[in-house]
View 1: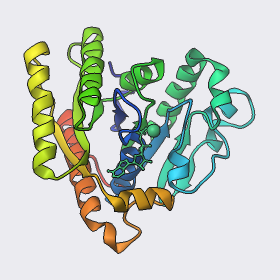
View 2 (view 1 turned 45 degrees about the vertical axis):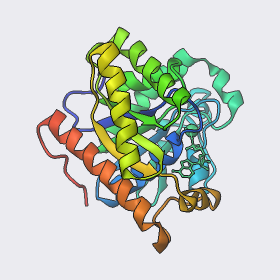
View 3 (view 1 turned 180 degrees about the horizontal axis):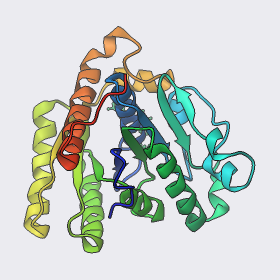
View 4 (view 1 turned 90 degrees about the vertical axis):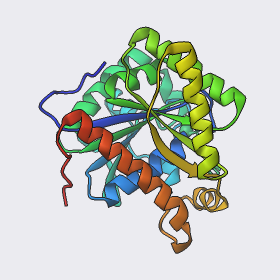
Length: 265
Ligand SMILES: Nc1ncnc2c1ncn2[C@@H]1O[C@H](COP(=O)(O)OP(=O)(O)O)[C@@H](O)[C@H]1O
Ligand SMILES: [Mg+2]
């Protein structure tokens, strides 16, 4: 399940969950920002066709979406929006643009990934909730799927069912996971451990833990102020956790590629 060009060293991750509202977009945006700050050339693809909102997290509007390109309103080269050194591409800027059809969109996004792969070290893909076609496309395009867990029975059971479904298609799919809305480090680890116990018991699987993001008023404030974390001094605890997560991801990339991805500047 990996469609990328073998000559390219890009590492592609999808951020996914069973449920909506668990912090996929928040995590995608802030992980992309931290990867970029660490010197990795990073692109973020907002593949949530119905409710794309990554641009809003940066207080930007989308000039040209992938749907605009498909409709002939712009060229492929017009899609990347450069935001403080990272590249953002949005699949559909309005829910109405989702009507172009998933087959056409998936074809277009394959070309977008290929286009970004030659110039980026990391591509993160923010996906819609659930196991719809866009999520499956995104997993197929990725080296790893990062599951966003929260400590709620419904959320954990949704992520479990999502994994079970993906493993039924590809038993060797590479997942990793983070815990969002965590009370503290211990509770995050225990949530993740519980999830792995369930995976182990029912599917004989175990997935690596990348870290956690605390439930935090400062995260809420940053989202409300439409800025990524880190522009204000006070965000340091949250930033450190996100840095930890992306360092684990860099480790996963290095393991898969057997070479350390190189910072570009
Ligand atoms: N760690 C967190 N602490 C506090 N609020 C959070 C946190 N993560 C997400 N949120 C809140 O949850 C809402 C949903 O997050 P979002 O990233 O849009 O979820 P998803 O993309 O999974 O639907 C955000 O608007 C934000 O207010
Ligand atoms: Mg989202």
